[in-house]
Image: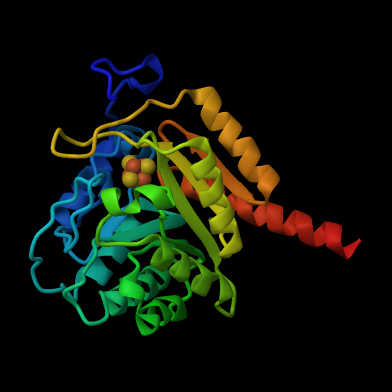
Length: 298
Ligand code: SF4
């Protein structure tokens, strides 16, 4: 069960500098939402200080209510047709070379918000030539056409988090399911022209190491090559308790194992989140791909 005291490797110093102030100002002035704030991400100071944030589109209210997530849930307002443009302005103002765009679930929309997602990708690319775009999406309730709408906008990285092991899905994300998440990842991995496919898992929710490894096998079998593994942290007492704080050396072991299994780019650590240092993970993926191509050409 969750201990009263955080272990030393979970404590962080929070410092705010000029980068933080700039990001904060842009988010407020452009009336945007970030998953950094809404999900109470422990990396917010580090990421915002370095001038980056992960935009959360389709509003700030999610139609689902997962046991691990602090994003507000309920009935969301109408979609905002100008949101893509504002996200693009923020990316330009921040001078981003790689952007991560995520969203709430919009199960109230026929397309799950895929069209606005696609428009946001297009607007960002138009405003920031050369930028690479990573999307972290819902499962669109398994709708092929919604996923296709998004992929036609040609993000560089398609990410969808499996979040936890098969055994804990119903408890942790009751309105999603393991098979549907694997479906989204597999479909993205089959998309032509290619897109890099990424997923993430939280640990410390009561899963076993064998269940984690089974999940990694399933991700690999469904085309995932980029992986993040991080510690689940409880946003409030209304959320799932932390079952265990996984020590850093165990995260290192998972990373080593994941690479041996065949993942090309892996980030694993207590504070790793899907979008944490996403640009670095993408660069690692590209380097690995190029390295492989050179090797195979010989
Ligand atoms: S890890 Fe991602 S969600 Fe967390 S602060 Fe950084 S960019 Fe935001």
